[in-house]
Length: 304
Image (tube, rainbow, N blue to C red; front, top):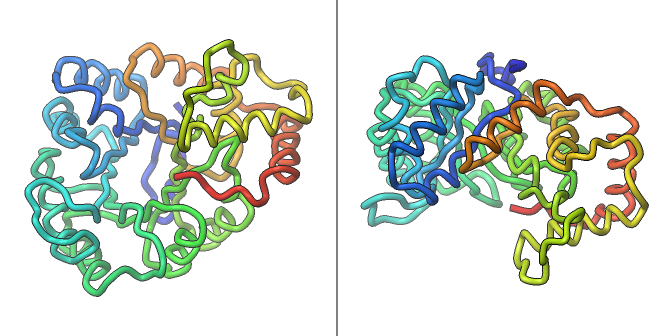
């Protein structure tokens, strides 16, 4: 697995990371999660992303692979009310409680990256939030602090020069970050973590007979966008595998690690095989997808 440097953190991260939101809501048995996460590490993925609000994700990670802590870069998130906390989210008390809770559940004495989770604008957040994050870094509870969000909120947070990393959405159907956000991050040497790189495998659905009338919310929005992009005709030179197309597109951009969620070991192994053996995509395919998005998607907002 190719390793990249995550901006000014100088952490070496696998270009494919694993997002653990699904793990936290899909499983409550440690055996299944242990098989999945140990396979992740055995196959060379070293970037694991979770959050305080992803069900029992942090707890499962702590129970199954904390004994291999030296083998992976651990990122979690803070900001939302979690556990038994009775206060208000986006406060210093919420941040402090969440970080200590995460350390306990993850069975570790430090986190590599604590990310402020989905806080919007205006930036900065309420008094005390940033001080709490910076204090956690100062005392060694986290090595670095990051931000997870899109659009103008991400631009404001990155421009503050406080954060070491940014996690933001980027995919075939959600390309806004390539206009300004990526270049701003690179100019400040801020590491970029790409989330939803395969956009719920939506490109795969455009080529199947699967019933799509029941789609709703963000999933329907992604599907409608994919169909719109296909109005310009087939993509010449693109791989037949829509997951390879999706991952290849995302990783053709200045993203240090792209996190993909999975509940299935075989899907995980397929994604790893794609990244290791089927990429990069031809530049002509990337250019074609840029042109299509520029034509149809300039007014599309980023999808959370």
